[in-house]
Image (cartoon, rainbow over all chains, first blue to last red; front, side, top):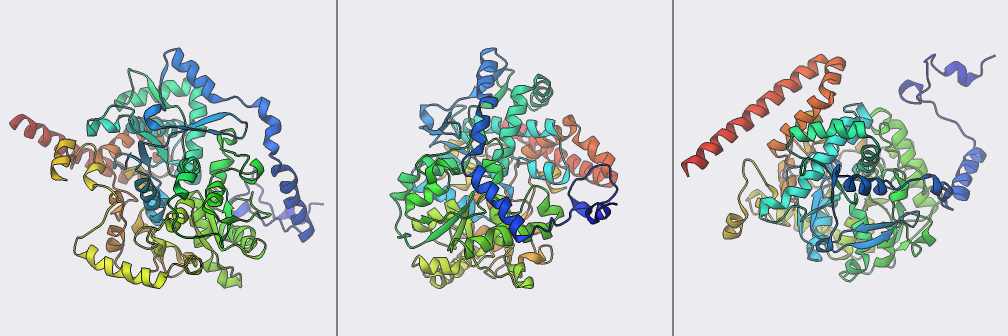
Length: 458
Length: 112
């Protein structure tokens, strides 16, 4: 006789666990505890290390292809002032610290604009040279995984098209190609690009298909595909710069307890490329964000569900919002508040910040109210380095209650809010403050001005 | 459609209390018109409403070539012929717009 679960399951050829096929697993408290214990016992001890010998470093393939004359590598050179970090397997990963081409995130720019503005503000503070320009597409990965728009050829072409633009962008300013190095803002883009890089390096067929497209676009270098030496996430830049950022801290944050949500797209996709550091939670967790917070003086609290997804998934946020919201509240926010007694949850990815921040309000409908500030690592760092919470960190776009955190940091948020409202009148009158000269954002086509012209007008 | 026609997956004016009712009543905790709030972001490329950042028209046109050459548009035509037609019209419009700019620009350069 079929079990109740089997009777409920639709008679489809395969079980996808998505849409109408999704069912709650209905774990008992004991079963849920056992599942979590598995994570604590195995994942906490970096279980993935046991597979080390089976994982190849795709960068070896990349250097071979360059040697064979098939590709050109956009190298990280001394001008980018690289710092070497260590990945999960102890492999070296060189992180540039200067001359960046900012590869923006559509989710950050669309609904968490304080995320990129805080990053650029920190870079201004440290005297970092960069270009934030209009000639870039999103990675398109969310649509590929979420709604099926795209395929591996389009994902690979978009990857190489954007990174080629990063390579040539400086020429619009009269500087040599390769001057700027791409810095990826979005965790989903970071994970997607690394997966796609591996496919490209391993598949001659894919390289041939993409080469044809890039040729049509005029985006080959000496007739070859251009591949970046490393794919670098902004959180890696924050990590290697954490000591220098901490020199600019003006607010004591030693009374703050933070939980970090490590993004799946950052540390579970292509895990062998992710930075770990023996000085950060004994090297048992991804180092980024936690390392920065600790260096700033924050107490980072560990918690039992640290390994869990935020609930965003890839498709769930679109097709299974109930799952997303429940998971965010029950497995992350509630645990951070009740178990870790956190003042804030800090993340390093677009989808996670959005999910953890925006899922809290609806919890009130089922008496699940666990108020917790949620923000990105760079926003928190900017705040304690003196950035304005509204004008710069743009916290008014956050739905979660950040006001209590600001009070604990000694920031008068009501005064800051009033200042921002006054500033909005200035904006209405066209007096807008920006982090860089807006003319630099256009590097070709309508509106482009040659650098000499920009300099003359400045 | 936003992604295919602009290369951005999200836009500020897509995020409204009606569209995202589960986010609560405050898309922003400061009451002001969206265009003013966007201009108050200190990153110039984000002073936009229809796309997450300002997208260079040349970028969009390059993306159309990728969609066509990678077979994505063929996939779209199979899944949703009406959307395919709309997207094609938009792509044609943008290509014409860009071509006009190129021709004007070339004429200006010649005159100089």
